[in-house]
Image 1 (cartoon, rainbow over the protein chains, first blue to last red):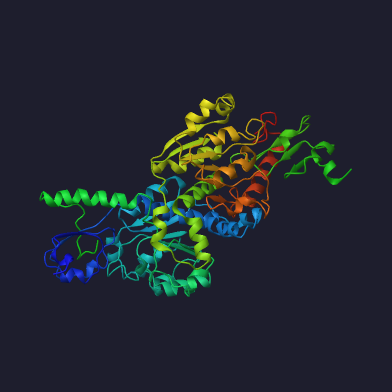
Image 2 (cartoon, chains in turn cyan, purple; image 1 turned 180 degrees about the horizontal axis):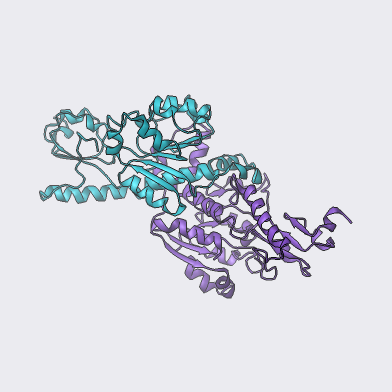
Length: 274
Length: 274
């Protein structure tokens, strides 16, 4: 038996195949909120807990940071600064205000709810669609169009499940208003990224702010790097200086529960997918 | 007489010396909120109105956009994107959260108040010092230190007046906590920028987010461009796509007042300086 095969509990997102090899594992504490790829386990013999809620503040902050950067030109100004190039007033007509925008938020988890808190002061018109509602209406293009048609921002904060995979498929993407900016701080699999790139290149969608991508890391040859209307945050949204310390603290707290046979916190339902 | 000398009213920030040459000017509508350099006029023979309040939303949005970019690494990620370089997880420990920070806001005008609205959801500890209070305590280093010592963010949103010029002088700058980030979306003259640069270079101040600078445009040779802990937004904070349309609309409304001998809106007190 390997060391891992002998373990009764584990902290960390281990390789999927270890989950089948294990002999003694009773409890797996993930250090992520997403439970992919462990939702593929069919014959689960141990409890899985995740960090649901733990990343709400940091991901919500990056979601808004990306939006405000896009609207206020921060990404372009950073590149200009890097080139020591002053443009001044010339950039002003290309800036936008977030105030009084229409925003469609897809997702009803802790991150989405925290994001709603952060945008409260901007007097926006906000529609929120929790995952269950999206799944229920997955085959209704009318449902999608009604919510998408006036949205300045379409913000995806969804877990990876069979139903969310390519939720934004070609059909839905092609019906998005050219004035809309798409934001994804959930999972990269939610969007048909190759088709999104085509639409962005042709300005059929105004812009995209992507913390997550279908294939990570993004290859140097991927044309998405060069699209001027895209902000890429490289799956950093969950991070902050004290992130790892807090993860260990959560694990230690749950380990206490485990050792005293108390209920574990954040047990995930792998069948449901989050 | 030149065309301008014959004018009885004018929209625009004209050269200062025109203000002395004018024969008929009754009313000058500025297209800015700041009234510098017109506060230098000693023998004012005409009414000056400004766009007080007009930039509150856009400047407050850029103020927060700059802060969130600094905290969430958006400026660095934009440069990485420009270089097609993936760093991913490696950037996460250098990110910060705005939640529960201590913030000192210097200024009590419409922009500062709007900024306070926008940061309301982050559960920060906020102290606001209106200009009068700052002026009253201008010579008290104790007043300054007490407010500065625990501030994660020191946010200057002040007009240019004799009392705000180099408000952050060498003495005050040298007493700022090394963990503090300085933000200035008011006027560049408020800070001794040469000394600020020294402190930033030595990491005696954590960072700076500057929409305004002592000398604009910033020369290519200015070392401030290369400081990694600085975000420069090139005096763009007041701008947005519909900015000029709104300025003209305000002017037309005030012209109506002017022609009907109604009181003008936004008359400035040049002696006070805003």
